[in-house]
Image (cartoon, rainbow over all chains, first blue to last red; front, side, top):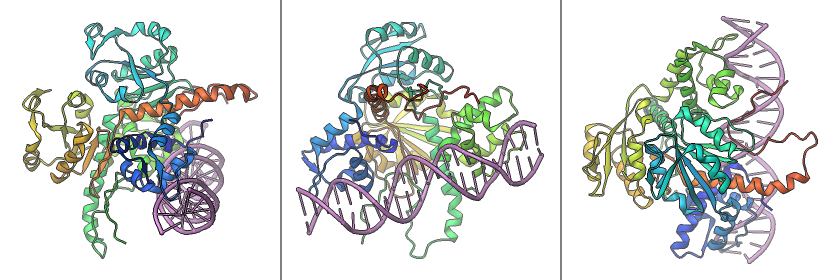
Length: 240
Length: 240
DNA sequence: TACTGTGAACGACTTCACAGCG
DNA sequence: CGCTGTGAAGTCGTTCACAGTA
């Protein structure tokens, strides 16, 4: 029933979905691969190939039906069934995550907040009482947890992951700066601010080192601006 | 001077760096590719190839000198020169980011906080006064800004990006759920919680759909546990 | 001997370019 | 005619397996 999607495609589907929601709100009923691609920040060939993997049917000469495509993508991503999310660690970051609107927007429900600090346990944050981490098994027994978000310091993260796994969680989003080891079948994704900054730093270091050399090897024709970037391509009109 | 590194390698260097710092604190003077690889959550072949791109010299039969490797990686990533970071948008998330310790830990310095909301401008957050976004050019003129972090709602993000670029910023970290378009030579990286959750959701949906089929097509030999995962490989000891 | 560094095989993803359909 | 869907080519990244060295 579910097609086998390349990881790279899966990672882009949520972006397509957001672009489609925007288009729907703006009143578009159909959209061409070219339009949707620019809205999502990719090129149209990639978008078409991605959508073709879903077996999704566009209409040649017309484009894709926006509402239909939304349904297809939401189905494939499993966004129909509401998934319970628990958040562990309510320091600065956890506090912010608890209030993040994007959480609720796509079928995710924050089921509980956990911490181990006595100063934090018992507090009400964005409408939920923070419970002690020890209660996690009870909560999980009541209402199966789909996804656990770890926003603790690095040293506690592995043991939190172990608890989550023991409670039946099969998807973990890790904000702690460390590697987690989990049994097979459990999916871990990592978000790390410091890593992102260091990658940006590399590219700047690279550019400033290249600057001297670039002056010497300047291309005849002198079109600058095609620098190092994996980012959104800003070229607006490539004259033919 | 700087070697040409594959993007995939660049993205892993910060993780190696963190692992190395941990090892150094634990008193290790040298480390083998195998040890470092597990500490960083990759396999050893990948690690060796990555390091070989830096032209880094390990010692055959021994391993890598921890302190030396730290220096090499920090140099390549450009972490020697302190880079100024500005943060735009001090809602829930921005507030948390302003207090994030990881910011300062690797040569990044928060130079200023900006917002447009009169309720927020003027507040002191983690030791810095929030300034109005209009003052960005002044701040940039005084002290060149390397990296801009956008933590605003999606609708404001593009114009913030434009202002940052106009102020000479060449690296942007975008937390807003939207695509930014920037001129060539400006590097944008995106962090999006909702996307990560949706990817996790996909894998769960996939697993639960596969469950029925898997029971029928169970492999002779019956080794379960090698599920769908791009995550840290949890295999602890693969007996030979 | 124990480990690194690396050519070569492999696999994944992207891009091209066009056949084919509405 | 315009646009999707897709084979085929090209690019990038990973893994293997071993030669070579301290």
